[in-house]
Image (cartoon, rainbow, N blue to C red; front, side):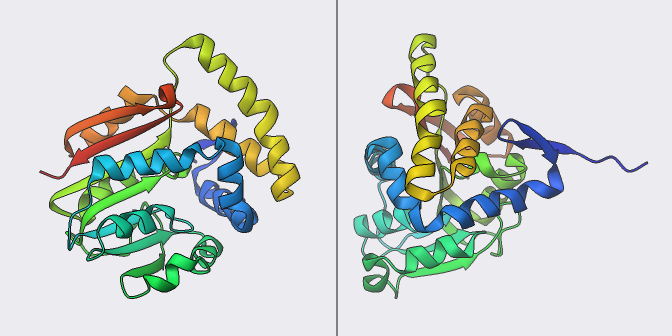
Length: 248
């Protein structure tokens, strides 16, 4: 008898084979409003988190970045802004997100340094040892099999390359976590309905945050994928966290 593996889609259990299509549907529906919703949901704080990511990453001249689940290019634009001689590839499985990214003013100015590629984090369409830096921001919790995505990150990085993950995480204070949960469950889906006309997609996004491993558990997953010098930093009391690792 064939065993059908399941995984979570928010708080639902779904067949592994169906999750990618469901996630693709979410981001296809919200693509045109994605950047606006990020600003509204986080009161603009996601911009500070991404700047903190760049501060820790410290882009260097000539580096080649792969930004997976890079959507509309937020992280790639910041990276190239810090290192004008660098190059970047934005990879996302949702083409409509990449289309929105190409429409941004920065995309035209940086077109010689920036490529947009449709691809799956669990089976990247790039050769081994191709990139100096791999980033994924608010995307890894949507991947069907996170260990596969981390293994792919390790594969495509050059020796000495760096992984950096920015993701929603767990607040280590129970009282603050409860307050944040109240906001998330009661406000964000309503905002999704009002701004993007799509409550279910934002209900999924809230639920997917709760299903993601906590800081220590995710750091252990990065180590298991082969990375060394794994560290993390909490942002905004742990609402988000930055994880860093190196291909040694």
